[in-house]
Length: 277
Image (spheres, rainbow, N blue to C red):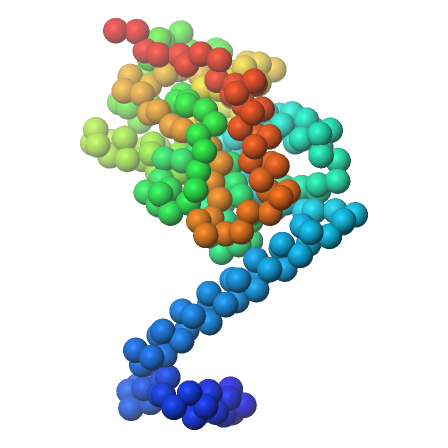
């Protein structure tokens, strides 16, 4: 094939063997692995060069691709982006919603420039990150639910409820499932949803329960729900992540700086609710 011929020509020009053809499946030789890594680095530097040329050009509109987690309340993000656009009207933003796990993967493969995520995941150290808020997960029920007046709720009590979880790529799901398993219970998940408003419509019926971040409860007063702290709290950090080694464009640096400053002046969490002893 044309690819095979190109590889053979490359080997002849360098005087080395890049592929070990004596094995099935074929494998890269040590020299082939070195060449592959160097080629990838060259391609990354080419992408970086293109980005820098774009930044150096005048009159061009930049575009940032930003992901955010389903647990991140949309109105908070809307306020941030509205303020950012007022400050930088020539920087366009493409906004996409994912679970935190998926958002991190998309940042790693350069589909997203950065993401606002739940940072309680095992691979968070693979990324540059900045913590924006400390929060905790609360158990959400209708104001008319039998558990609504409790100061804290136990895993045993929650295991008897019909629970609505976010979709599978949510870090929040993993944290909650782990807590149930640690205490010997299995959550009764009757539904999964990626839409917070739809989920809360079900919770409002008093037949279902879900989990949200404590900072989100005040945003959904119209749904008549109560957020109850867990007897053993699950604390989380919400923050921005971006890829290590990635060239940070001028537009992206503006967004990183602006977001840090914005959340210092407009904190996501005014005061965390804590269980009483």
